[in-house]
Amino acid sequence: MMERQDVARNDIRQKVIQYNSEQLPADVKTSHETAAFVIKVEDELVGGVSGTLFWQHLHIDFLWVTEKKRRCGHGRALLKQIEALAEVKKCRLILLDSFSFQAPGFYLREGYEICGKVDDHPQGHTQYFLQKKLI
Image (cartoon, rainbow, N blue to C red; front, side):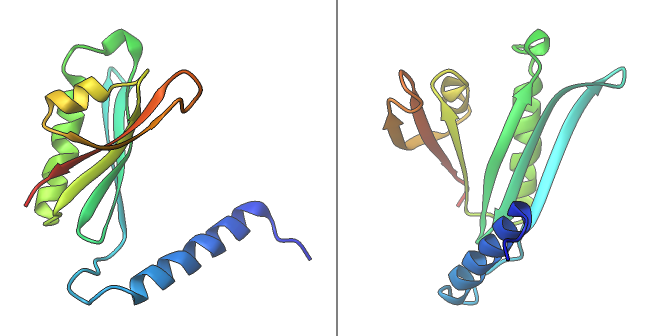
């Protein structure tokens, strides 16, 4: 019998997390947490950032600012907010990815460095993997 896809995806994810956790020493294992911060102006969502914390690092899943409010400092404010959380949680580094049509230059200006890239993905663009070491 086939399970619903979302249930199957979660089961597979949990099995991989369990296996990975079994391979790590106790001092590296940290609880798996998620976080999100938003900026609203007059009850309108204008930006947000979400991330996942585990294994002594923060992975920034998404950072978004509405096009009308870009270049107003909202992205930087959101980034600083989630970076502060990473420091409080004693993360060693922050990881994220950004496509060439998104904001790799923004992250580079904020102290991130490119640690990998995939050319022509999606076609005609580049996917960058960036990191910022905290310790």
